[in-house]
Image (cartoon, rainbow, N blue to C red; front, side, top):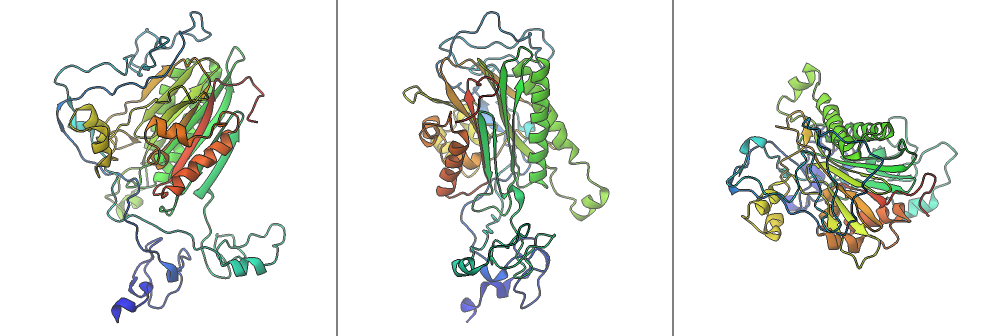
Length: 460
């Protein structure tokens, strides 16, 4: 009966690379995919996006700012006056002891209301995160019997992760079973001074389209600064993995260089997002032949979120729906979300058309209204500065994590109590939390302790 035929008998194209198949093929000739173990497609949807517009009737209120205890600004800080991105000579202000509202890159309070009757502009565009068919290509688990019997490989010889017997050739395929090996970006971990970041492909995507960059800088007065950037590739665009990697690298390099020169951190963050945008835009300049083969593909695109932490100042910047959270070391203090999404759901909540639970339960919730890419209608970097009066950690992450810990309190409960002194372990735990929840998307998180410790002090 047809219902009892092997699944691969009906395949005409490889589910991994779309290469045409011939009858009886057990492995894809192009990528080595094992056609005998094609999994069933999941019901969930990874993050994607397409262009469109989503006009919203009625005025839109600016999002409420997160609240957390802060201390009064220092009157004579080491920072030069930061120029406003729009050209004003008025520097962005930090906040009063009980007002952790943040100042955006235009110098406006994040809690300020827009003019009455101001509608959401349909011209800004919306990218919908909904693929027609989600991809799920988990790596086939190795046979434990083969693993137990396999001899220890000689130094410099890499064994196949699937059969544990064949050698991996220089093209990344097993000489024994033909299985394509995991890519380097499938799982990445990095520790840098007092902070750390972890990125994982997740359980449903066939590749990791997230990227991160972390680093430390010495300010002109000798005090330390920690920098973390996290980017999430827009899966419905072409080359989303290239977009996130280019953006994270450009933003990190821009921030570290600007801070070392003495640029105010909030101005440096704004400039870094602009530099990241230019790096992603440059990817759209493909050869004409590439456009001939895929003329309707969207330009490479990604979201971005980042933080700069010094001995007394915390700055965040973002475009899209990747987020930053504040989690105090003293868990009796309240945590806070430091960013507001550029998303359909956030617009619905701000317009008063839905409550947060309704908006984020809608299938359009992850349609983003802001991103980096050549087809973005307008680049509007958001930045905010804070002066917390107690130690804590900044959690910088993609929606692959916050989908499983959306509220600030939920995120705080997922963050280990020793995150400030063991950031790598804490980042690993958070990625594990997302994978245990289903791992429906790529997962990336960076943890940055506040305040930045003196130079030379790292994690315990």
